[in-house]
Length: 284
Image (cartoon, rainbow, N blue to C red; front, side, top):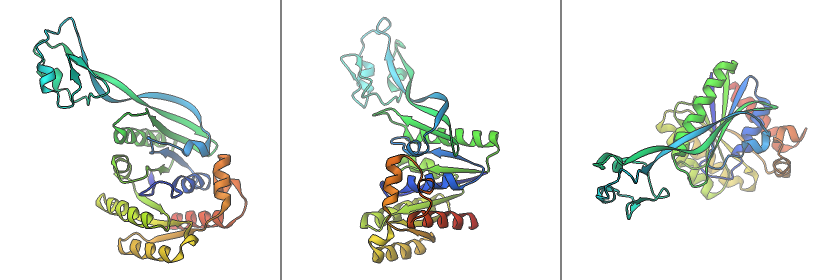
């Protein structure tokens, strides 16, 4: 099975719009949303949840007051200020386990904490594995890894030959977890200074992990000169430009309606460009 990841380097470039259309065009695929902090692929695909499971992202310190001798050793050793007046503040606990290790009375244990949900859903364009991290929760990279593992298991079980992954914006831990081990990455960018800057960073990351990358410039016609500069920079980083998508009001309209672009309109400049981009990827 092959894994294609769509990334952006920054938010708002049209990454999910492109991936949502790929979901319509591709055959024998499984979909995965690796943006667990702010997932939105489900808004386009309107999935029906088949099953869900708790995600245990961290462990939190829990003190047994009956066994505690009030020696204060745990408070002295906590480097996060999570223990004050011999009480554990769960909002500050990082789950490192030092307090449980040093407690002479063994009055502190580390408890699993549910910090999110993982879902397997069905959409009109195939199975979707997605997740949601609870507000303020950490370990998003670990949750992305879990999403990818569930996606591979489901794809193997269903006989899917392709996994299409909607990645997170930026270059942080979730993107690292998304990139590692995929077969190829498509970076969707926009012709702005921040788009170029962040594209370079995410292409450097792809190169670090040995992932072949290519580039697509969305809304290229709002700044043709910068589009040329972006494509030249991408070529210099061994990431060939595969396509340009023009500005098209149908994109915003399809998003507002919660329908992938290529399914929303039968024609139009952006739709033609996305279809051509997918055909180019298939041939590559």
